[in-house]
Length: 377
Image (cartoon, rainbow, N blue to C red; front, side, top):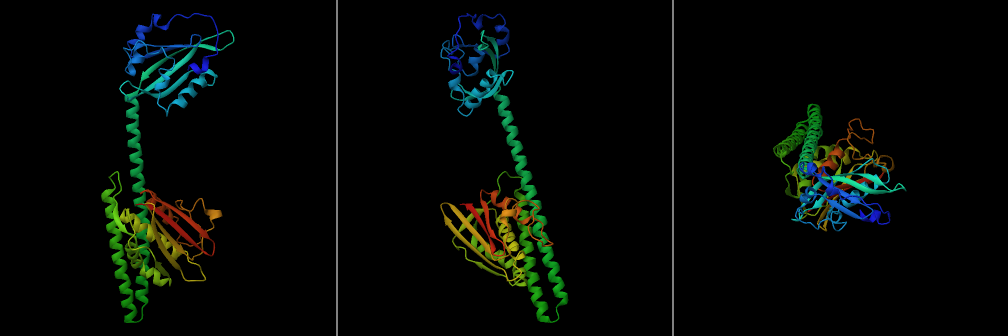
């Protein structure tokens, strides 16, 4: 505080605050008192103030004008001084600040610090301030616990919402595929065609079973703070997803090139990773260019503790200048497909970020799109 008032002059003599008759009454409440005299460039701290930080028996505490200031936590100092200055400048009717002060034992105590100008010189410059210190450490710690609990609730709610979207989006895809295949089965004219449809149905049935098992895994871990992760070999998992989508791939004459490194792996939630790859492949097929069959290439690279996965297609592309800010938003759609819901990319982003990864996109209309996933080892 001294830096603010070293140039204030005057010859008035104020009685030392410790002679005030009501100081004893305040001390009974464990409320600390500070009295800053700008004329003398001195500050007085009552015993309760000093006791808050373990210096109640230190009679020299306060001789240095910055004895308290120097103990304020570095992260709190800027606001501490700013709030005091705002009161001096008339921006606030009184000074109030919450900050941490270093205790004699090395720990920090949370303080509610309040004060007010009580004397000014003839020029209107403040020359005396009186304030209080209240130890709010217990309150602050409880507040932090409440915030941590709130953060946990928000996180769990996000997990639940994510799970609900996975159920509605992924299971709907299976249901739609079953409906289409059963229709083709009824229309099949030869035994060979019926057998082929039956093989597709068996593959789809296995895919549905895997999806349900993965969803059950999420239900099991939903109550945990940390999402379960497993060692997942990228190439092998992508092959499994491609096999599950065999009917959709064949129906659209799509070609998928899995060029990922067979030794490359990530520590990720199995259901999340499966869902991410599935959604990206389905989108690449769904939004194919009308003039050509879909061709999708998946590559990987492992460097600097990051696994990078690129999923590139030759589809209709996305106008990023127009839709770039909304591409991963919930219920945001950018094409005219009647079955577009704007859920898939939202799921992908949330599932990737839930485990510390990132996703970005490059796209050109009528040329194609590349999604880049970066996942830490």
